Length: 112
Image 1 (spheres, helix red, strand yellow):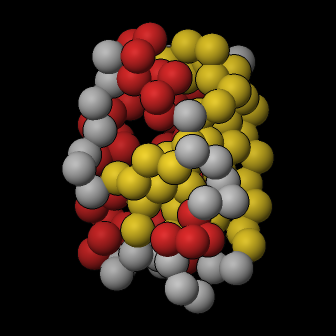
Image 2: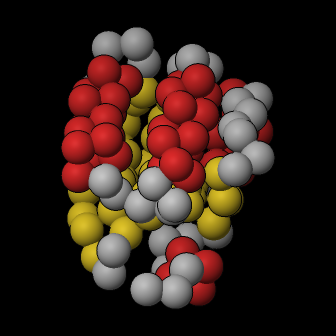
Image 3: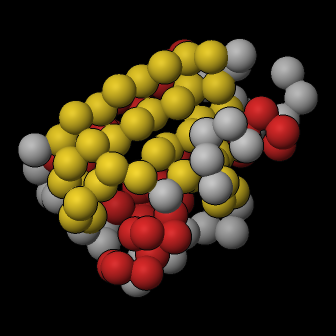
């Protein structure tokens, strides 16, 4: 089961994920983010993995795709909680993804 909370604040879309990311639940994330990135044109996106208990390794392909689309829009892609998932699941993400220690830190990285 996966719960997705989204908040748009000061030009940044915060996506907080709770639960499990597997082949089934990743479709929920894809649907939510594809719309925001391609249709709405979100430039700044933060994915928060702090409350993820399991993640399938194929999520890295999707993260790479999203980060490329964000960069094409002139924006930046951020992740919180990456250290937790990277250590546990050996997941590596694109060099264009910024790792943040917390959500507040993202405001220091961009000038809106």
